[in-house]
Length: 161
Image: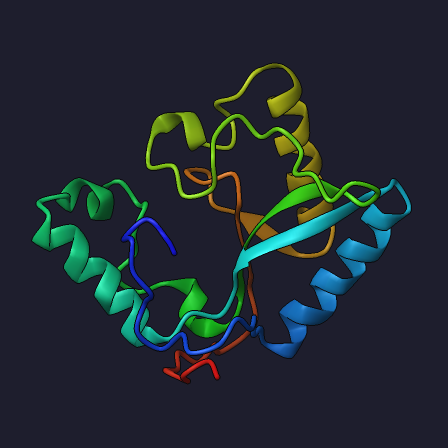
């Protein structure tokens, strides 16, 4: 389940897909974090176009055009390219998520990467540095969202099975 409270169209199996470039970079990030006893928990990766369109329609249907305007829901998502990933840090020994200050998919300024204090700020920056060291860029409005740039990306609508 997600912020819409429903399964999005195009998600028929609990699988994550990424373009090879993004998957290879993410594997390097995970290996480096493992040396520190940390791992990655991935919430979302490739997203079918039909799922993005459903999110946009939902926001409009409930009168939350602000979510589109403020960048929390994109009409053309980098997830559709297989180059974006939503994730957090976990302790490998326990599997527990590190404190990040807000839940994943929080639509508020408190979820902006720079808007944290204390342990949450340290953890957000640790995640950002690890991802950026391998070519990913953080979306400043969402501490969990990172994308990789590649030449001539292609948007596609593959159902996840």
